[in-house]
Image (cartoon, rainbow, N blue to C red; front, side, top):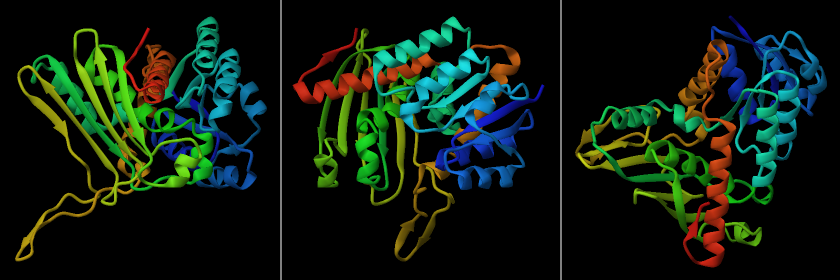
Length: 330
């Protein structure tokens, strides 16, 4: 079976998914839609697909699934439209910035018996998947503590900050999902602190650029998350899981993994400097997982419920910062 795709949104992340779909032997990119004709034309030329409107893709009989890479404030409406149209849906995170809106959207997906996958790509990174496998294989015993470091090389433009929903909903949300993925239990309490240390303009826009979070589960397991919008040494992405019998860790990745030793000491090449190069394999793997679930009629993960859970944690973290206290999750 070849899964036939429509791509909604031909921007930066749209290009990533266009490549992932077109590189999969079990998929074909049929059409692309974008508000900017030049962007859509570029993908159509690169991958041999058609440029169509969203309405045409919605009604198309030669399209089985869509990848939604449009602005965040359009995600929920598009998910509902394509669920009603009978298309399988892959949507970049988040479904929406409002928990109530996400719940309403998920309800529509359930009522239409739709298929929805939310784009938490880090679950599909080979290194992080190996960490999860070590846990599942019992190599470190029972998970007790998870430590996640996620720091960007530099802050995005302030215009982006203003519409992003804030660092917890935009950046830390990936780490909330990863914490849930590794802890094996749902967090029931959140404590967070936040500051503006990188760019005063981010604070002026009502957001933060440096945050720390502690998640706690009912049994006492903990996840500690460290985020910064600035890492002068590259894209800092590390995970450590401590268990009753040992520890497993995924270190930073480099474009070239070599080490040079000479009279000046030991040196290694720099880290990746962008998420699109660091997570190339993860993006390909998540699309492959989506395709496989469609083909087999299997449950899709991460689901809309996973997207909702991560957003709820983001909201709780922001509340913790504003109120200066631990916030319990219902």
